[in-house]
Length: 224
Image 1 (tube, rainbow, N blue to C red):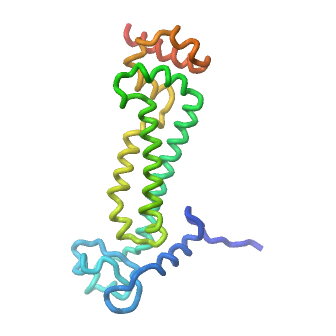
Image 2 (cartoon, rainbow, N blue to C red):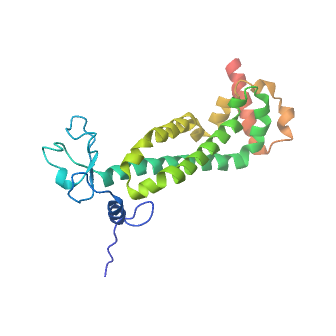
Image 3 (cartoon, rainbow, N blue to C red):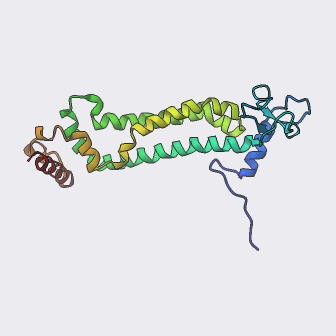
C-alpha cells in the first residue's frame, strides 16, 4: 500500500498544517461578522484601503474590496521564503569562505599586513561576512521567526526594509563567491611587488606558494 504524504515546509510540519495554525492566530474581521481575517488589501484605489487592511471572505465584495483577493497565508509564506533564502545564501557563502581559509589562511596572513587600508584586507571582509551571518540569524530569531509562524503579514511587511538592508550588505560581499585566485588578485594585486619570494618561502605550503608565484608572474606580465 502506497503511503501518501503531504508536502513538508522548511520549518517542519506540512504546509497545510502551517496555514491552519496561522489561521487560528488571526484576529477577527472588523466587519463584525465574527469571522477571522484571511485576506489582505494592498490596492490603494480600494475604498477600504487603509481602513480595513485585513479582512474576511465576507468582506470580499465589490462594494468593500473590488479587487482580486490576496491570501494572507500566501503573502506571509512568500516573505518567509525571502528570509529563509537570504539566510541560506549567507550561510553557504560563509561556509565556502571558511573551507577555503582552512587551507589558505597562511597566504592571507602573509599578504594582509602589507595592505595599508584596513578595510581592504581580506580578513576584514571575511569578518564582515561572519558578522552579517550572525546579525541575520539573531534578527531573524528575535524579530521575524514568530511572525512567520503566526502569519503576521503586517509585521512581516514592516520588516522588509531590514530584509533589504541585509540583502544590500550581502551584495557588497558577493564577490567572495569567487574566493580563490580571483579574490586574491582583486585584493592584493597592487602590493604583490612589495612581497619577496624569500619572505614567504618558509611560511607557506607548496600549494599556497604556487598560488603566490602565479599571482606574482601575472603581475610581472601586466607590467611588461
